[in-house]
Image (cartoon, rainbow, N blue to C red; front, side, top):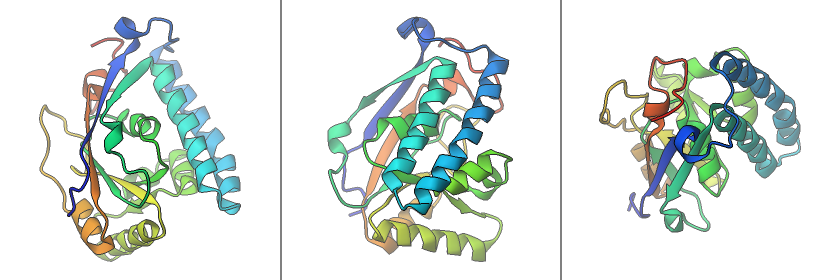
Length: 219
């Protein structure tokens, strides 16, 4: 069955009330640090990719995620980790609340995995180079043939033992509540014959909602 595993719940919180010792960078410096840290990941990602060291590539992505959350003063709590399978391929299906979702997932889950992202993100300067070097799979939602090719690549990854992660709403919700689910995660699970690990994220929208540039210092 698709929904073979129990769910994981992640709750992100700001440092203002939970971890005052964290050094939260001022808003403009957070974006400067983001650009520098993202650019810094590309050489090691390419290097470990050439050596076929996926675990080391994931370590680099985790380092980047630590910087993103740390510079914004964000911590998180994870519930349900015993539901994560110890071995075997699976698809991670999560809701999408904020730009902080990806870094939080990267640090919360115990196994390496690859994000499936929309092609528009892959075209962003600096970020696009790093995401390709990290092995993220970009889907062109406006081009059906390219989209099918990307999903076929995802199936190959899954059958090769890798995990992939999809935001099932397809984009961040600008309002409270969830958007209708896209079908991609379910088609992947059926085609690759692997189960889905559902993940629920809360708290990140309160820190940085869609359209917001300055992460809030508190909830």
